[in-house]
Length: 268
Ligand code: HXC
Image (cartoon, rainbow, N blue to C red; front, side, top):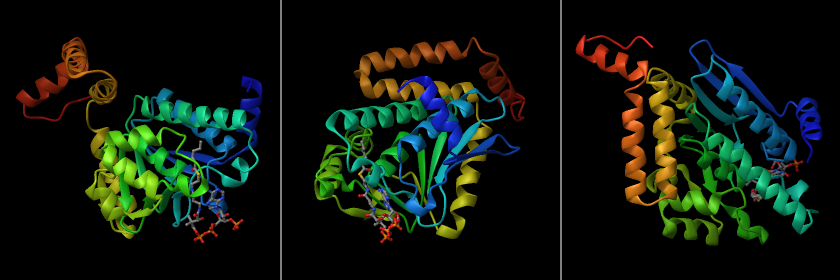
């Protein structure tokens, strides 16, 4: 797809809204409530664009990603759009989703998925591409693709195995079952659970905690953890010590260490 066509699609659609709050927390919302926020091409392109905006904005320290309405985070890739795809179109679609989610994972600001309801298929794959997940206790999560004769195609085969191990990944993918938020929390797919009425407050509290931490340190930590999943222990540790050292060349760590010894909060 040419850049021009991509840009037109983004401008014509308001399928993703971006709100930047005063305290450096950005809220990205997928606005397709009538289709349970299913991911079509336009939504993936808008999402990628909005994440790049957040990455570049000096006003954004932390991003919260969620779905509109109280029923679904995202109920998957758009089945109506996928129904008539050719194999080549399906591969392009998979690549677009993988690229969009890689952009989220590589975002230099922490991205928290606020899982407010169903997170199925591409929706769970999206949540797993975020750095952290806070879920409503009423959310249902799963990878139902095999019930459609498909497999996950937006990175889910890899990220679920990384988060919860190959045994859980195979069980979730092969069974296509939906799992409770409690179960997702138990196996490590979800970081924190919240009662539905407290989901926003608890997610924003976590976001504000992160916005008080060293921005460069968080960016570096996310990169080193990501690298460690792709290389062996010794290469991962080499990157860890190099990056640890590199932080000493930056004012952020100097101020963080000084503030501790002066018994005050860092002034970043
Ligand atoms: C398109 C969807 C959708 C989806 C829901 N809708 N999920 N449209 N794609 N993934 C639409 C419905 O068609 C319906 O539209 C409206 O949203 C409300 O959904 P209902 O089914 O009426 O709601 P309910 O009975 O409460 O059931 C909720 C649900 C069910 C259990 C979440 O909608 C469901 O099973 N959805 C599909 C989940 C799924 O299989 N996801 C994986 C997709 S494959 P109308 O117009 O009728 O009101 C995938 C692959 C990713 O994600 C990788 C790609 C490369």
